[in-house]
Length: 381
Length: 132
Image (tube, rainbow over all chains, first blue to last red):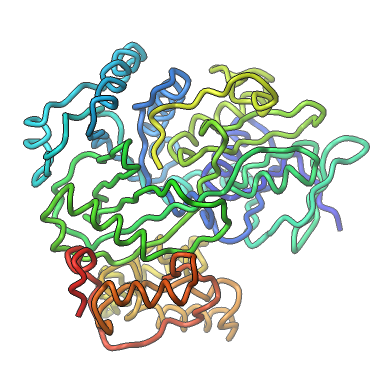
């Protein structure tokens, strides 16, 4: 039996549930979300939880700033504690080139009301207990950046969406997608079949595979990134600490664990979620070098997840010519969680009104058809 | 009613599990993230099997299917055979040119292996190779 819906959202990650919630809130009905496993099986449940506004491109600064505004009141809006905490992001600067880039970018961020400022080595020493500042030239600190618990954000959106009538289906793997002659789409899963005039493709690193079935070519690649978590220790670390140069970051969770990761430039595209010993050594070494006292604590777990990397590390959002009712949001390149509240809101505006309050045309798939691609220099990992 | 502690590391009482189940958080991976069971120092060695038994009983004996299997168990814990370098080489050799797999191998481990309590490794041990 074919089930009819107004909207089918493919992907029960934070972007999918936030889209479903926003659409239901705007008055749309008959919305179905299809998730291949449990909520957050993919990148949402595996991400580093960071939310930052320190970016190089105006477009990213603006999107992140608006996302933070939503995060600031999201627990109240959803009636669910997202554990959003604004401990700031401290970017450690380790060479002249990076110093110049960051120094020249801060005014751009300040102009857009993002309150980043430079920190001297001395300030860093008093701000971060036990930090080793050897080889550092200083840092950049934005106090309104922060972290949230990804699962809580996801469940919050999920519960609020359910309350508004959204039907969330777990354990549904999409096996076949096709465009109907009369308009709309047919979506077949391992369990059931749906037809809907509107289809939203937000399946993380699998978005391109689903799009390919419709003849849409999305030039993203799945890249494996790993994270490790330590046992909980007394709260001592206020900000998320990152190094753009090393692709390294860590923060302390509200439970006291140190959670972080480090990038690997040499990875081949893969759909594997396997953890590696190489990562463990590389990350443990970087962590101990940054805060030597952390050598005494234990790493209790590591895991991996996929970045859906786009050629310019910027998201791919919106519509595709010739595919009425088709929308996608992918290619987040490691920044999907932090951008999800604003991206979902904009996509919902696009679907319900045909326009968006912040322009997203520059993020359309068509940018890869020609012209020069611009990459944000603040990308990590 | 007396309290029954399900997860000693994270101090999760059995009622919290039932409460989560009642709210629709029904599979082991989600229950872990929602209640905190299995996320402490022992990483599920003490509570996972018991939780899986409860889930299996609730699913009318459907153990091993539909969300009662954990995706992975934690790895990289002492006691280990030799130093870090030896362990690393051994793992790399087994895995060929790919970095060795520690966890995340879906379906490879269906029930957490029960071992005597062991401690995860210190960062110093990982970096310096003093694994014992």
